[in-house]
Amino acid sequence: MNAANQNPNPQQNAAGNPPANPGNNPPGGNQGVNPVGNAPPVAPPVLAAQPPQLIFVDDPFKGRINPGTSEGAKTFGWGVLVRTVQVDAHTQKNILKDHKDISEADIKRQAYKTWGNHAADFLTPVPDTYDLEHIDPAQIPAHREIFFRRVRSRMIAKRIVAYLKTADYEVLKNKAQQFTWSGQGEEEIDGPTILWILLQICNPSTRVGVAELKED
Figure (cartoon, rainbow, N blue to C red):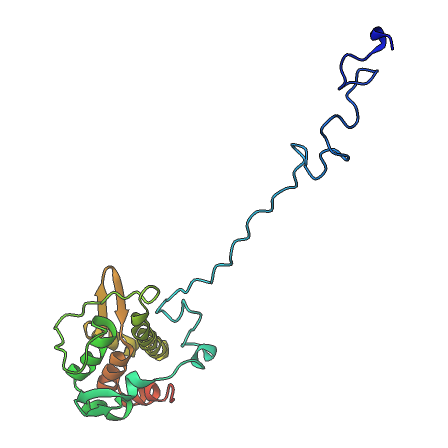
């Protein structure tokens, strides 16, 4: 063979192009290797669904319960805050039936546990003030029982106030210092105390009407 006709570069064919399967490449070339820029898209990570956040509001109106309406009244009941007021270490009284046997000190002791000190019991001294205790039921599970107690108290208050005539409501407002608890820019009213006051001072027709608002 004439040396002039020999291909000086064994990696190229006669046309000057690389052979289809040069030297060390196995048959089929670089199979299984994606060229740069043609990699399949990577799916974004799937985030776990977040559980719904519990929101605690002790105003029944904000919780879509309006005890002053016929629909809201279906969820309303006097409950233990009315039926079981502690008057001594062994005796409980019902505000509706025994309001004359319940003193102002007795009714405030119960309200103090609701609004002033959730850890209070019958022997805990009750201060002269009406300072509202801050609770955080969303973060502190131990506060949830007292939270629901407060909801019940608020429902009782709103149910009664919605029923009252203007004259009776004006009489009640004169006693507001006995049932209003405040602190940190907030103000709450205690339903059982309002009920007790009305039964003490209002005319017989109002007392009967309030007492018949709801039995449970």
